[in-house]
Image 1 (cartoon, rainbow, N blue to C red):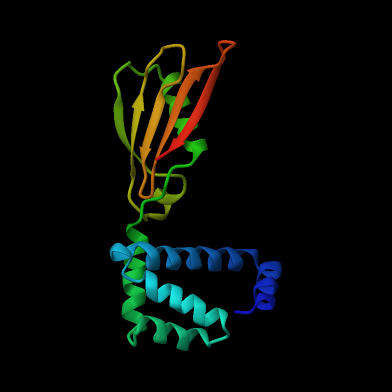
Image 2 (image 1 turned 90 degrees about the vertical axis):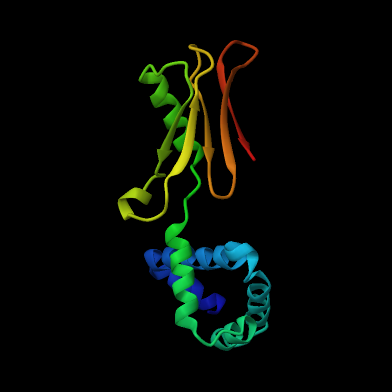
Length: 170
């Protein structure tokens, strides 16, 4: 797709542009990370060939050495449907605040959480989240174990005694 074609789709059909973006992201993620990066080198070769003006279909077959494109697409779809999304900062804050409001105990609790929109669509897997109360005057810390990284929401007091939060990605 040329830059001009992309701009035309983006200007005239926001939903179509969003769908194309998500599909491209999912394909790139699959190629770079599935099966321990099995498709990473061919994917980079495909991008290189396409950027040099090669026909995308021919560049794909040449780079990946695949003639059974439907079988490849099937593996990609299975991979995407099995993915778990990472939890957003806003979701961690909501989990922390809702546990504080519910008056949860001072014991850590582990739960399975479906990030926004995933459970409704019936796709993906839940993310394991641990809620760790430390101080009754602060919301509990929250640790979410996502597929790409672990994100921690830590609560402390600033120098003036006001609650402050810190997000740490590991």
